Image 1 (cartoon, rainbow, N blue to C red):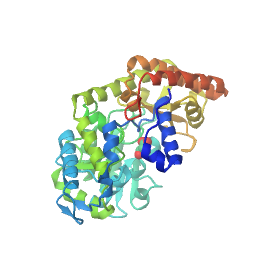
Image 2: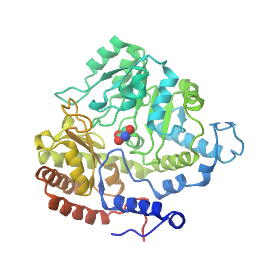
Image 3: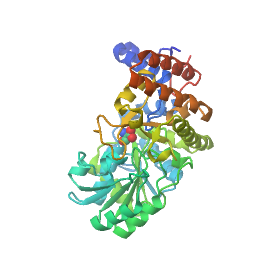
Image 4: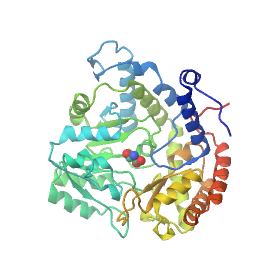
Length: 423
Ligand code: DSN
C-alpha cells in the first residue's frame, strides 16, 4: 500500500529530505519491526515533538530559569514531571535528560567520583554500555566490575552478584539492560545494594511501558534511582527521565543541569508529557499486557520450530535467540530478514564465542507490532516468516526472502501503524 505524500512545507523547501522522510514512512508501514527497543509513537506525540516549543531556551528548572519568557515552558515541564511522578509513583522526576546514556552519566555525576568502583551487567550478557562497560566513558572514568548470567540457565545468579558486590563495594549498582528476556528482581538487587552500601540504579529503559501498564513489577520502592528512556515500550519521543526518592532529588537535578547538560529540549519534554498522559489511560494497560502476551506466544512458536532462546523463553517484550544450532551467524540472519521485510538486530548471546560485530544471536521484541494491533493469533505466522527467513539466509535463497517480504507487506497493510500518513 503506497502511503500518501505528507509534510507539504518540508516538500516545498527541501524535496530531497522530504523524499527520505517519505521513504522511511513507507518502510515503517510495510515492514514487520521487531527491534525490541523501537516502537511507533502516536500522532499526538509526533505533533508535540514538532512544535514551536523547540524555539525556546530554558536552562534551569521550572520557576528557576536563566532565560525569560518561560510562561508556557514552565507549565509544560511541570506537567511532564507531575505525570511521571503520578504514573510511576515516585517522589521526584527529572524529564530533562537528552537520552538514556546522558541520563545514566548524570547518575554517576550525582553519586560517584571518577575512579570509583561501579557495578553493572556486562554488555555481552545483556547489560548496557553505560553500566560500566570498558569502551564507554563509564568504564573508562570509573572502575567497572561486571556481573552476568549463568551459562546453564541464562539467568542472573544473585549469590554471584552478592559475592561480587561485597568484595568490590561499588558506589553504584545498576540493574536492567538491553537483552534481558526475564523479569528483573528489583527486591533482590536492593538487598544486595543495602548489604554492600551501594546506590541501586534501576535502568528500566526497555520495560518502562510494561511497568507503567502493570505488566512488569515496579522498581519502586526498591531502587534509589530509576533511569529510563521514553521511546521504547513507553511509546514516547526519544528522550529520558530520572526518578528517585525525595532525598536524591537535589543531587539528580544538579547533575543533569548544570552538571551535564545545557537547555532542555522543550519540544521533547512536551511529547514526553503526552506519552505519559497516554500511558496513564486504561488502554495502555491493555497494550502493555498484549506486548507480553505476544512475546510469550512468539517465543512458544519459535521454540516449536526448533529455535534456541536464551533462558528458554521470555517474561517480557524481548526474545534473544542463539542461532548457532541453525548454523547461521546472527548478522547474516539479521541482514537476510531485513531483505524479507522483518527488521531485527543481531546481538551477542551470553558466553558468545563470536565477536559483538558478528555475533551468534538475534534480538527481537513485540512492542511495535503490538502498537499496530497484531495479537497472539498472528505470532505463529511471524515465527514462520522468521524460520523461513533464517533458512533462506543459510541457503542464500533470495526468492524465498522476496516472497516473505510480499506476505509481510500484505499483513502490515491490514494493520496501519500509529503516526504514519493515511488517506
Ligand atoms: N540502543 C538501545 C537498545 O537497542 O536496546 C539501548 O540503549
